Image (cartoon, rainbow, N blue to C red; front, side, top):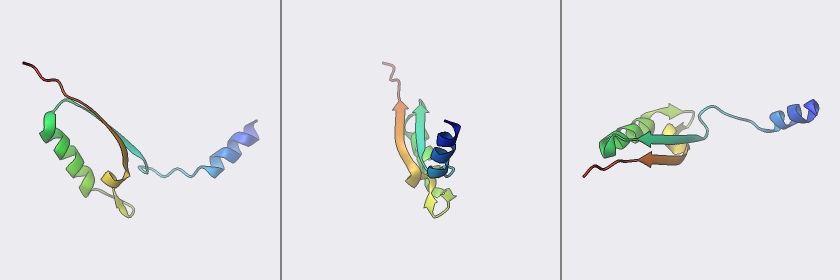
Length: 64
């Protein structure tokens, strides 16, 4: 069983920051824009970090 696990790990090549999921809570549009702009300017290998974002989740609370 351990040999299967080692074999599986060898087949999966994980690279840091290859797949990013963002979760943002509050802060509004300006905060989200700042975060996305920052990721768009940061380089990781040949891509910007924003190009590696695969999922975004956000929550906004509106008080009336």
